[in-house]
Length: 295
Image 1 (cartoon, rainbow, N blue to C red):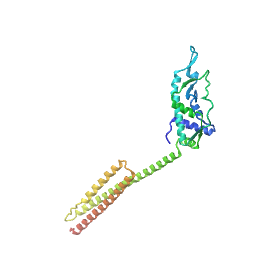
Image 2: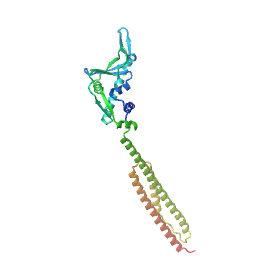
Image 3: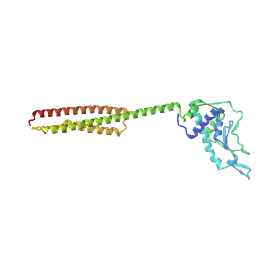
Image 4: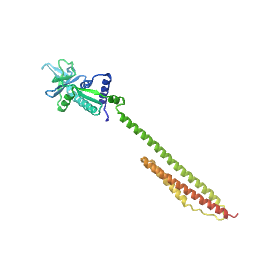
C-alpha cells in the first residue's frame, strides 16, 4: 500500500464517514464536498465539459454588453479545479484496484447535458470549458458512478491508513531489531569479559614474577629468567585490544561479530595456557634455586 497525501486522506475519510452514516455514495457527492461554489457540467453528445462558477463571486456585470463575464479569479480557479478532479479520479481508480472500493453504474443518464451540483447563481453560472480531452473523457465516465465502500477501507482509516499486513510487517521489524540489539549487548559483554580475564591473568603473572624474582635474589647463584612467552602474551593482549576497538567503531553484521567473539575467546584460552606454562617454568626455577641455596 502506497502513502497517501493530505488530500487523499481527506477523501478516504469522507468515504468512511458516508459509509458509517449509511449514506448512498457516488462520484458526484465527493466532488460536491470539494466544490462548494462551483459545479461540473458535461455534454455526452458533444463530449465536452465545463466548470461552472458562482456568478456573484467569480463574475462581473458589463452594462454595455448587458452580460456577465468571468473575472481573473474564475480563470485562475480553473486549473486547481481540474487538478482536484484528476487527483480524485486517480485515487478512486487506485482504491478500486486494491479492493477497498467498488464502482458501478446504475445506467445511462437520459439527459445529454447534466450539471452537478445545481448552483443557485442568478441569472446563470459562469461557464469555463475544460479543454483537455482526456479529463473530459474521464469525467463523462465517472459522472454517474456509484461507490461501494468495503470494510477494509474503514479499517484502513481506523489504523491510521495502514493495512493489517503493513502493521504486522512493522511489528516483525521491531522484534527483529530488538533481538539484534540484545545480541549486540551480549557480544559487548563478552568482549569486556575477555579483556578483564586477560588483564587479570597478566596481573597475576606479574605478581608471580615480582615475588619469584625477590625469592631468587636469596640464591648464591642468581638465576636469570628469560621470558619470551611474557612478551608474546603482552603482544597478543595488545592485538586483542586493537581488534576490539576496531570492531566497536565499525558497523559489522551480527554473524561477523559472533565469529570475532569466538576467535577472541579461543585466543584468550591460548593466552591463559601460556600464563600457566610461564608460571610453572618460574616455579620450577624457584624450586631448583631453593635446592641449591647454601646460607
